[in-house]
Image (cartoon, rainbow, N blue to C red):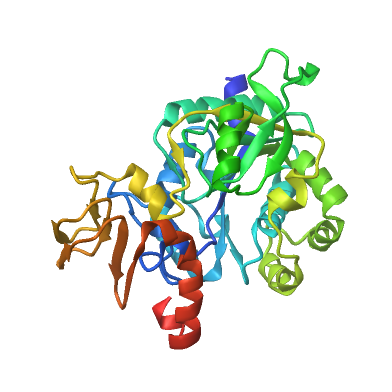
Length: 373
């Protein structure tokens, strides 16, 4: 029996899950030895990386998944995704942002199937409308197949959020997007201030940047050659080693010298052939305690008491208290605070100041050592 076109497309599609971050904005729940992607932050019974894998599994055969992560987390990945073979976990010797991560995975896939289409997704996002998300990804696969088009997924903003980057769509008609809901990208914008975020949302032309990408192997390799030629040449030097026992030694040698740069800044913001498919499928990067607060169950006073422990709140409103099972917290007189305890660390700060958490983590590491972060 000949395979159906849908089966052929699925077998030609690969998924790269980026899982190397440490989630420092979620400290102290997320720490170096157990970062956010391996946690069940929302109490669903599954870690973020497990949810990401299951969400994309209907679109991609299990053997076509790759996870790029730190060597520290290799065993954790295999523990959370036991369906994967060890060789499907690509380990970075050092963190070098998303462009080297994508280059590494692309060259591994190209060694096996240079005609493949790729989905690249972070490991730690929340998506509640999975059927809608999957339909949009299928549209994206159809749009980029056989072309050099680079595509990202945008999210219709529900509020003037200052913690996300934005994508501005080109409202002019384009022949290549006719008859589709795909739009050409006009600009990428970094995280705006509150006033600019309000203007973005009111314009109707700006969408949140989800950090989820779809493209062909050939298309992204062409983009690397044009916009990050030194990085491309570095990885191209490993041709013949990818997928062999020589791969890891090569990566360990070249990776530390790679430029620390994101795929957004290195390629997407420069390429003229970038497109976006916008949707509204209950997305959040759950990158901060504030974003968790938006999705967590809250009581009549707007408090989110989570983490498994017991909490008694008195004259307390708008506060997140996250303590582990087996512990009790009594909080009184707090308004819009974060109270988070994990192992050997306790965080108490105003919710509005959560963007400072990364700085707090650096101070803790400098003054007290790695064991606390």
